[in-house]
Image (cartoon, rainbow, N blue to C red; front, side, top):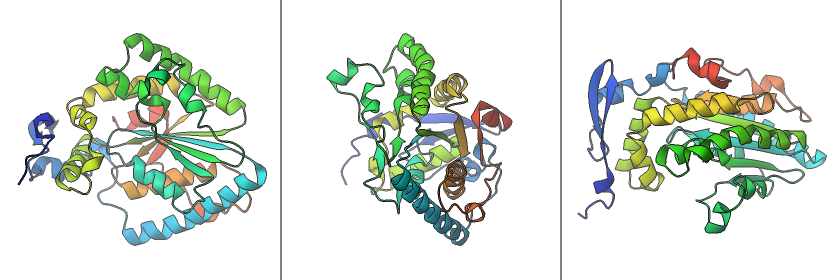
Length: 300
């Protein structure tokens, strides 16, 4: 059997669970019991088990019908929507985006996931390459990561200078104010996952050859930088949670609850034709809230 080409990059990570150090190694096929047993409740998650698949699929069906109505309204009125999705790695961003877009017309519901900037783009205004992907009339654009790379992975991994990071935190609210002032409906979601759940999902990816593409070298290096990412996240939320561009926090240890509540919040904020508030249902206040104050409530 061939050697793993990324094996030399795998760090051993030690985290504290119940004040006891636990060592974690992605290449060990056995997940430490302390991590596995504490994954679902990590980060103070308020539920003991996943939402049942039956209930999830029933509720998602109703919400996706409403998303279809919303898209028809965009097409009829020319309204525009931008949704930014950000998270810690393995928090469930990709699946959440897919739950929004699954039954929408992809010509008018676009996902933007940019690779690292080219030499030309590095010499431009930082926001310039994102501006070209903003929606035209009748479109919805979802950013699978966004300009907020400069608030998270770039400063933590040393891909930007402290001066560039500080400047970004000042400039981002101004940029977003222009988006909103132009009449675009603007949403920002932060999916929050507990540390043990993140490690469990990383382990699942590492051990499953069909999912190994989801685990990049940057993800591997980030394993030992949980606290640095927490500090960067907090600075981002404090600087960029504004009236015109509020952060919606979604607790995502249970991906099913996260997806349902993100869609509910989104639909409740739009006044589209044929809207059925009963079909949308109520947002779970234990799963979704606004800004850094919501994170502080459960010490994440």
